[in-house]
Image (cartoon, rainbow, N blue to C red; front, side, top):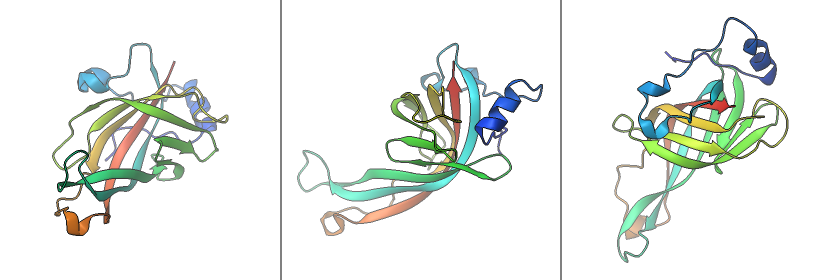
Length: 177
């Protein structure tokens, strides 16, 4: 069961902003310090995502003859609490709302998650493109991750160039001033 109330669209977001039924807040003090948002940030919305991360078997940089699974990129669908598709997430990293607004960002920090899951993450957002749900987003957290780690199967010279897709789930929480 998801721990966050999901807000789907800019209209729902603005309706909730003045409503006594605010979305449940993330307790940043309970998170690893590295992925806490800076003071003054306010939670704007949160979504849960289900998707895939692609990895490719490549030669390790500067280590001839050694290979590893290298991150290629993610593709995920963002959902509201009532399981309606509200956007997508893809390489960039980019979060795009169904209303067309989107943000890209740069990773600020990560923190370990449960074994077998990609790390928790804090991303600093660039200014939004377009007007809508992503307008004003300044930070994004990836929380409650499940799956998504590089494949356990061997990656060697025979497999060089092969790609593997790994399923994952996460909550994405959006903040602004």
